[in-house]
Structures are given as structure tokens and as C-alpha cells.
Amino acid sequence: MFEYSQVSPVAVVLDEVSPAPDRVRDLQARITSMQATKLDTRSIPTHPAIAALLPGGGLKEGATYSVDNSITLIMALLAGPSAAGAWCGVVGIPEFGIEAAARFGIDLERLVLIPEPGDQWLAVTAAIADVMGVVVTKPPSRANDSSVARLAARLRQRGSTLIVLGPWPQSEAMLSISASEWNGIGDGHGYLSARQVTVTVTSRLAGRPRSSQLWLPDRSEKINAAVPGSASSVLPGRALRQEATG
Image 1 (tube, rainbow, N blue to C red):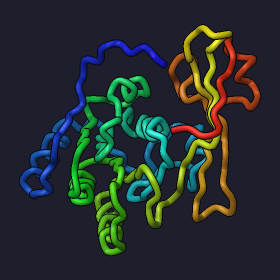
Image 2 (cartoon, helix red, strand yellow):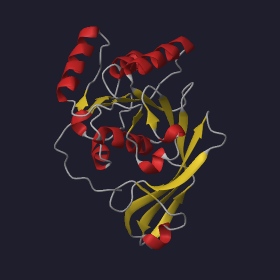
Image 3 (cartoon, rainbow, N blue to C red):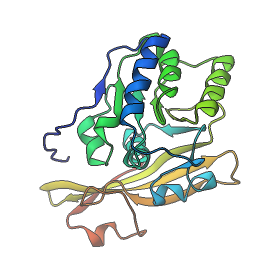
Image 4 (tube, rainbow, N blue to C red):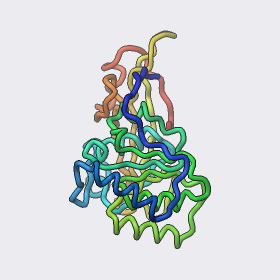
């Protein structure tokens, strides 16, 4: 769908991570030595088009958010904190592509991937949350209530933000893509050049869901708010519609 040039920085990819204290300390020392920016407020940088939908106007330190089946939306959420200097970790998502992440503005030098944590995913997620500002995880199984409570306490103590691919108990909000439209295809020819989506946020604190249309990405591969009904008139080629997307 997109052409990606070779990316020179390479994200740290760990086949497995032991939650042992010495391994965590080593990782923490490395991150501390390279950390350029400290996020010293309770909110962390988020793209304005997405922040407007979230309770409190942005992602919060120490909170958990759920994303319904969309790695693209997760990358959009990581872009702001990463650009501000936060380290980001992705646990249990082997299909998370570093080329696409770089296109969204995620700093690969501050990205750690643990694609296959196995049945230790919860321990790995907790260990990574000790040393990183934002952690993404995809649970292969349901965690029990006591484990969820311990992880929540750990996030609040460390000021880390957790983004879960899928449902999660007591999440601050659930983000989903409820409609999608690709642009760029003509009459049997052309290239997919931009995607307009409807992002919906459901929060336990809000009375009703909030929705907004975004370019994810636009023709210049950026995230931008979209004017409803403008897709066909702005971009050449026929639109390819989808009811739901990942």
C-alpha cells in the first residue's frame, strides 16, 4: 500500500525478556542515559485530533487505554509520546512493523519490541512498564483480577501509560475505528494513497461515545483531522470503503 525506504535506526528487538531485577536495571540504565525529555505532567503528548476525543483531553500517565483491533491506531497513539522523547515498548505483537512505525514518527532508537513473550506476557509487560513511558501489549489470555490490580498500581507508581490491543478491565477509554475509506484507486489502476477513518472513543467517564474523522494517514503520510465528506473531492481516484478496519 505504501512504499517504504530503508530505515537506518533499528528498534531494539528482544526475543524474550526475563523479569529478573538485574535485567530490568540494565534496561533502565540504558534508557536513563539516553532519555532527552522527561514528561513531567500528568498528560503526555498526543495528536490533537485524537486528544480531543479522549477524557481529560489526552493520554494520562499511569492510566490504561484499550484499542480495538487496530495497530495503525496504536502507532498514531505512540507517535506523540515518542516524538517528545519517551521510550515505548511493544509486547506480544509480532506484526508491529518498524517501517510503518517510522513513517508515523515513532523514534526507532527509543522503541523496544518483545514480539514473542510467551505465557510470561504479563510479567514482561510489568517489567517493561518499570522503565518505559508508554507500553503496548496484546494479551493472549485473560488476566485475573489480582494481576490486573497489581499492574494498575505499578503503572500509577511509575507514571507509565499502558495501551492494550483488545479489551482490558478498568481501562480509561476504548478507541476503535468504526469506518474506513481508502483513496487513490482509479478505474482498476492506481495506488492506495490515503485513508480516512472514523475514530470512536468510548469512556466510562463520558456519557456517550465521541467520534471524529481523521486521515490515517493523509497523502503525505501524516495524521490529520478530516473534514467530513471531503475524501472524494480532495484526492484523485476512487474511494475504497470498508465498514471496519484494523
